[in-house]
Length: 456
Image (tube, rainbow, N blue to C red; front, side, top):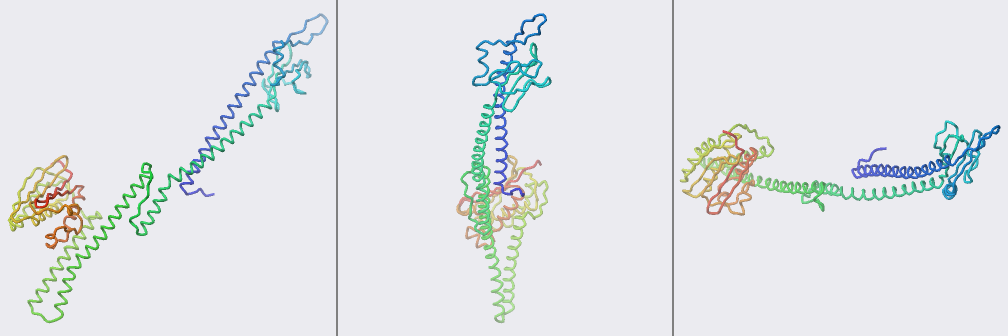
């Protein structure tokens, strides 16, 4: 016989076995306690009446030349009333002979004389008897029928069995209901997962009890399903945007080559066509490299050489590289440095700072300013970059780190792919840091990159 693999049946069998064990233990204990109580009451009556018989025996007078007369049993009327009656107590008295010398009217027929080694308490069928070997007689026995008690005990045992069966049935029904209700979210989870596997990412688990363990699991899975749906939607948009970005340079190359092949052109025209194809190919290469870098960062396959890194030195080197670009647009860069040390890849951190500075310069007004600073606070090493540009619209601000997102027209016209800030954010997160942005239209934009600080 194979053990059921269903969790519901396993729990039900375990619950049923435990309930049967408890009920059997309770019934067995209750039955034996009741039986012991009844027998103890009967034994107390037997022993008290045996004492009355022994005390009531009197030896006959001795005469010379005559045998000793049998003892006489003298009981008061009240004592005699304790034998016979409804309870059916009886007594039997023996001398040396096997035949009794005295026997009460309630005694059953042919009561066998006890042996010398027989125990003081004995049970014969429906009779319970106590006996005593003592002078002036050989043996005194007091007994009582226990047929009524045995019948009552059988009825009591049957009642216990009936009650136990009723409790067991109610427990199994209630347990089945509880287990079914408790495991209901599992079925809903499986059904929702199956529908999601078929492509319906909008499916969620209906959860009416969020306080139970399975209810909490359902909430976690619903959150996971929501994130999966968002990620799949993001992936679909990302694929579409990547295709769109790649289509433009491919179209340029095809258009230029087809135009060049339709008719003869001058050397200068051929040169212009090749240069246009080269620019389109370079744009494709930059886009493909960015996509590959993002893919490696997402998969955690981009190598990082982590070591103690001085952010002040990294930022100063990047500012030095950006000075010519800032000077071309007459933009002043103001620097403010406080000690800031973290554990990271200096080359990758320089990539972050360079991208933030280049954006701050490019999306700035002519003759504007860029502020860059470093400092440590509350266990975090920070790099801050702010400019006096046109700012980012409030509707676009939550999507500034989205891939291929280009909210303002100036950025779109600049030829950027919209992957720079996404790469910057991925690098910062790979270092265990965070990247935040604040912006006001016509005021400027403020980026803060935070990393876990280390002792200088």
